[in-house]
Image (cartoon, rainbow, N blue to C red):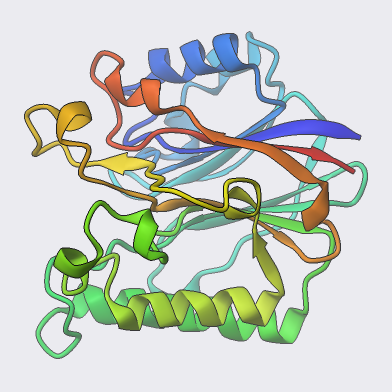
Length: 262
């Protein structure tokens, strides 16, 4: 089976239904994983996506916040979800392809503005969520699996516009990077994007606060495509659709894509 997989934090699937439709029509991924849908499942515009050929959907929703969905042209079955750190948030859902490959779609908590759990509850929740992911993967020992989503951490120095300036900024602090590395090691995950694009600055998120995001180019790579080591070599043609960040009323994230031959 050969298929293209995309992940995109859409920042409200109802508000940006048209952008999702445009992406599906222009890029035609076989599977699209969305995060931050900000909608209960019954309010998501799934019929519009089904009309474009994405007849298979596995989703978890929440009114106004969070929410994750997997849209597919290929048959998929619901493979469950996990509520890490006891947050009762719709931040994870999994689906299984007919060839047995499991796709995990994650939206890791952003963590607030202050990288100190003693004064910022959200930062502590983020670290606890990552610890929960680590412990689960350590016990489950996943294989033949792909993990995608907005992990809200840019781990490498070249995943941010300025490593030194962002060391104390949530999403690139050493403690977050270490927690993410533990998740990766626990599951035997390979960063497919960086496997395919090993060198150079690479971003998937640009702040709304920048008046000219493209010219300033102060980005971070917060969105990821990983695969377990047994299938990681099958991932290729990774890319980030930077242009989508410049569409009308865009998400602050751009889609990340990869192709798998399995």
